[in-house]
Image 1 (tube, helix red, strand yellow):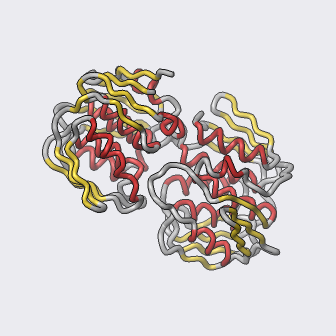
Image 2 (tube, rainbow, N blue to C red):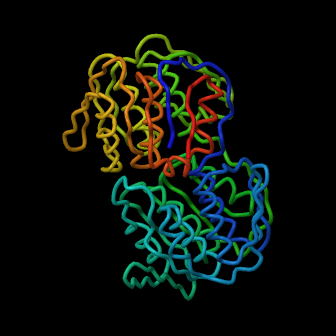
Image 3 (cartoon, rainbow, N blue to C red):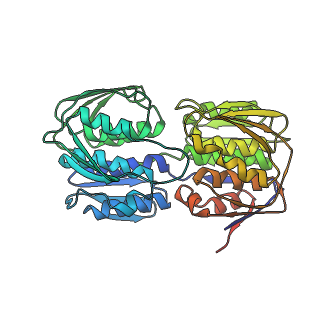
Length: 414
């Protein structure tokens, strides 16, 4: 359980952890190389530990110390992602692309994770089939096998981050050229490509929606740094907006948050960027705005719940439209317990700011929902008690410690 005491303004300076959404596919990419890969600035979070378990079960030798992860994938003895770990998080599916790139075969279970929407993997499987992979589905298991993995022209009907990552991982060592159109443009894709290029991969078009990948026979040892987590940065910036005050966030990858920072400014925050550091100051209540989530460079769905919490304590009436994951509005029900005025109509939410909320016992429905409730608690009278906090620790290394370092009254209890 996490307990938050409200009405304490935030002030201070912290360093942002490494990106969860970048680290996980980068860890999977280490499977492609019959040698050693080193990743720095790796976040110490549950999803990383889960991915470590998957890689170890496949035969890799790993060492994580002081946020530096060493992966020795010289010997891979298994081609099957364990059921329990695979179903524990949705990002496990990207390991399948790495296994195909490593040995032309792999087995995985349909992935699990947060209950925020269906997230079908049809796009992943269709792309693999274009590359000569035979797909067999037995109950909830996927068996993928290719005599020779071949480059192909692939067009994604939707810019799925996971499907883009899987195609990249499979194509890096495939025979010939892969042209991927309709690719996702999230910064985490850029980080994955940067790491693979450091390992010797040939990838062009990084940052665009069209990637050209020429397969290579072998990769090489490399070291690469995981970028700062833009979603954690956005969460803490929104926390300052809810509670009031000012903060300096280092290694926050502000260059990847253009749309979000513009939204914060429209809500009344004074936001400044200098290099990889972002500073924020907030006086008064946040102003109501209209937000529509969309793939990068649009407003990220991972920050929609947190934005909802801030709008609930703001002034005026704002609107949120969710276009990525239909389950994101589950947070509204928990905010209702705290006195928030939110009306859901299909894929849209109408939020009327009330200035403050009241502490209550609430439940983290998913990773980002839990963070949103912690932010709401910073502007609530009395204590807010958040249960099912295991979701939060999947993506936030130490949300309680970070917010305490900024002056927040928040603690974790067994």
